[in-house]
Length: 145
Ligand code: FES
Image (tube, rainbow, N blue to C red; front, side, top):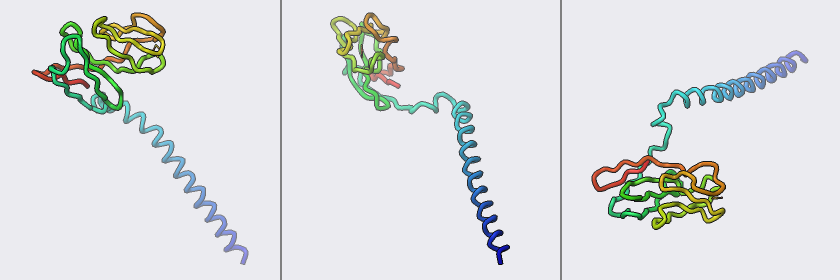
């Protein structure tokens, strides 16, 4: 009479242990395989692939146009006839910088940092420049990715 109960308990423990090992195996496999597949994936497919298209007419000489890309506020500027696009997020503590077309520079209102029209730091506490986005000029449009 006791034997079936013991067998039942052993089977139950085996099933529990087997289930736990299955979850552990799946967890470890996922933890190992994700970085491997992520590494093997081509860089172009890693990115969101979002492209923002802005008419050139909307960005006059010295002017700018704000937009969002991948959920990040950004801007495209026309500095001396050259288009460039940057994230507006300051590399210091994340405030949003503004473009001063007259001075040809970005200014951060939080701690007074200044960035040149190519995004590098002119003055202030930021450890690095603004994140630059890829710009392709296609006929009458600016494609930013
Ligand atoms: S957050 Fe921009 S300078 Fe500090």
